[in-house]
Length: 264
Image 1 (tube, helix red, strand yellow):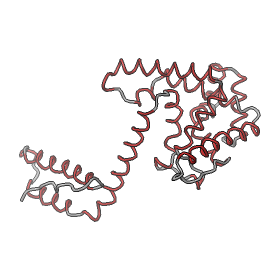
Image 2 (image 1 turned 90 degrees about the horizontal axis):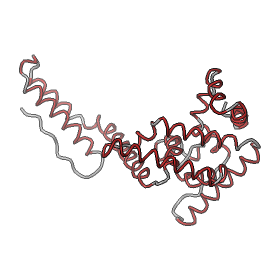
Image 3 (image 1 turned 180 degrees about the horizontal axis):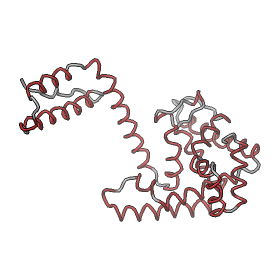
Image 4 (image 1 turned 135 degrees about the horizontal axis):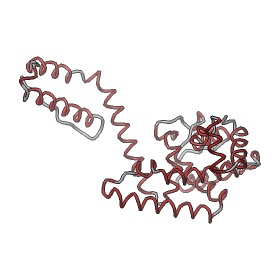
């Protein structure tokens, strides 16, 4: 009686089954090579074969694993195509909210990665080309430093977790929040910019479903985008630290925006 991995067919969830069975086979072989473990290898093999036979029970797990890997692969491709490293930081904040990554659908007030071009346009218009380009240049310098440090082992998570990169992102988010002082007018403007970008996208690719970006979507976007600042300014200690770093006026402007947008 020997445990054998079932060959995988196709490129779907069965690939995940193949990988899981390889792990199981390695475990059985490991135990067999350590007779002093006190484990009955024949009984372990019987149980492994019985477990292998429970395909009906395991199919949903393989499907979830396959879908998770596919989403991660697409996100990595999406990340690697971007040359705007500041944009990477911004998109990273909201990526988990995208319907493509398992978030709510736009019909339910959720977001899609289709908003990224429009969001970057909002950033450029709100902050100004010079300020935004300076931030992008700093992002490029940070990525260069990290690539030199990590070499072939560089991962984008190294960039997202970098203290200097986080500081750069914070400054950009604060300037964006401050730009919403005239909230109603600024909200209407931002929604128009995002919808213009979405309309342009559907004109280029008419296979894309029509989607109108509305105030409910703006709130979902703002909650994800400004989460780091919301968390810091949620406590008295955090507000003191924020004011010390960026000034009382910017703290007040950011808090006013958060209240107007019903984020707090």
